[in-house]
Image (cartoon, rainbow, N blue to C red; front, side, top):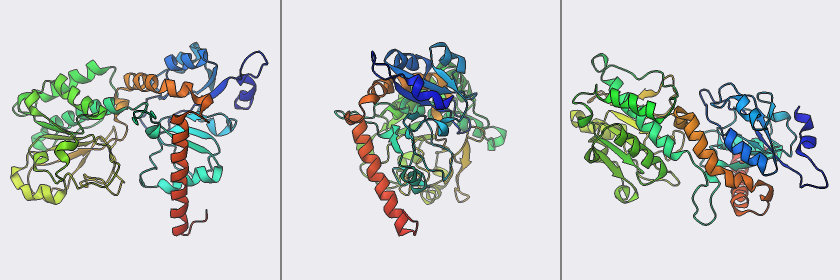
Length: 395
């Protein structure tokens, strides 16, 4: 099926050749979101695109929904065999491998800020002579803002997970642990469960205080919105952004709330927001019980929350903080794909925002949103090559 893609893309004299695009399956466990939806795929088809969709049982949208609008279904994980000229679009990073990557990939790759394994990822593109358009760095050339982001739903879901973790922590005599987060049918269902859970917290929802750093951004606004809808008073939702953090941490104010939600975009080294030693010094005076690191810069050497060192998962959403045996328990939620707790709504919003950029894909050689992203890719590719040479790895 993959081999016939160029013919299916069409090359008649009467019409312009159709732009092919291949929606790959997601291999990250529990990832239910999709970069394209049946709605946005239909718009692409109506605008001279040929859309190939890999069958994917874990995607929130059924295969038949794509087929019904005219997409061509292809086998699961077939993209390595797709014609090299067909761009591959997905969301999360590809599974670890040393196989060269000759295609053009549109995805979140998490390798531009020297995260763990960043050179391994870029080496695959260098060896395969492929191209990476990282979704995190597709920016509007005028506003310099990302053309599409899951930020709002990440913050919304992160705040929900934090609230559920706080309620769970107070069960079993203070030894409770949050288990088994699963996607919600919709936002209303998530808010209802969180609201009920907070009623079980000591003192009720009226006694819960939270701090959101990055509150003016998409992610932070999502976290604030969840807390409001879950019943927290406005006075108990502390909203910080760059002005409040400019003085440099660690911050006592973080220790004075029940839940701290980190929603910043880390682009350069900054003072630590909080450390285990700082928490221990506060002793029993520390109120902080749950940290939600939506930003999830776990392997970033400049992580401003160095109180944990692993990403958590939906089956096991929290990790204990080493509090040096002092004060109350504290747990961290560090799930790096939180929006998949609201997979349909998050996918529809993201794909709708991304659509104008994808529609300009045939002009990617001249469209600034694409040329700027490719320029950044080449810059990072060179940085990775230099790093490889320093470490004795042949370029």
